[in-house]
Length: 182
Ligand SMILES: Nc1ncnc2c1ncn2[C@@H]1O[C@H](COP(=O)(O)OP(=O)(O)OP(=O)(O)O)[C@@H](O)[C@H]1O
Ligand SMILES: [Mg+2]
Image (cartoon, rainbow, N blue to C red; front, side, top):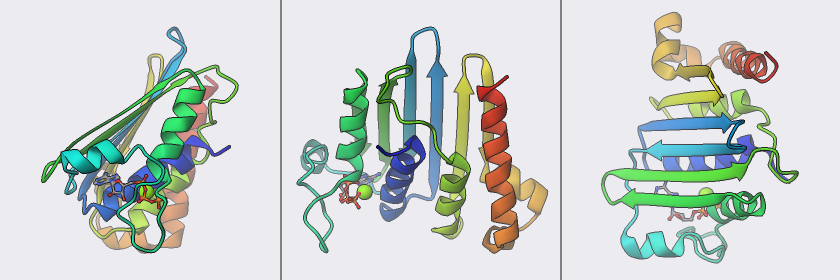
C-alpha cells in the first residue's frame, strides 16, 4: 500500500507535466465525519472532455513510453477501497482539480507519509513553481506556500540547496506531527 504522500507526488507530477505554474494542495481530516479529503488543483493545460472520460481507466495514458497510466487510477482505487470517492474536473487551458475522499479510520486508508519530502521533490522538479500545501485536522490547521518561503529565504536559488530543502521538509513534517498529536 502506498502512502498518501506518494499518491500526491504522482498527482503533482501530472500537474507539472501539464505545465502548471501554480498548484494548490489541500489535505483535510474531518474526525467527526470520519473522512479525509485530498484536493489538488492546478492551472495547467487541462484535459478535453474525451480525455477526462478516459483518465480514470488504468489502461489510458498519453504517455508514449508505456501504455498504462497509473497515477489517477491507483488513487481512485485506494479511495474507493476505504469507502470514499473520487472526482476529477478539468477545463482545457484552465486547469484540473482532483479530489479523493477516504474513510479516515478505515484500515486501508493510507497514512500521510512524508508530505515534506513530496513538497520539496515537487519544488525541485520545476523552475518557478508556485506551490501551496494546507493540512488540517478538525480545527487545527497548517499552511505553507512557496510565497511564504520566499519571504524568509529571499531568493529562489535557495530552493536548489539541499540544506534548505531538508529544512523545509523537516519543517513540514514537524508541523504535521504537531497537528496529529496535539
Ligand atoms: N493535472 C493534469 N492536467 C492535465 N492532464 C492530466 C492531469 N493529470 C492527468 N492528466 C492526463 O491523464 C492521463 C492519466 O494520468 P495518470 O497519472 O493516471 O497516468 P500517467 O501520468 O499517464 O502515467 P503514470 O502516472 O503511471 O506515470 C495523463 O497521461 C494525462 O494525459
Ligand atoms: Mg501520472
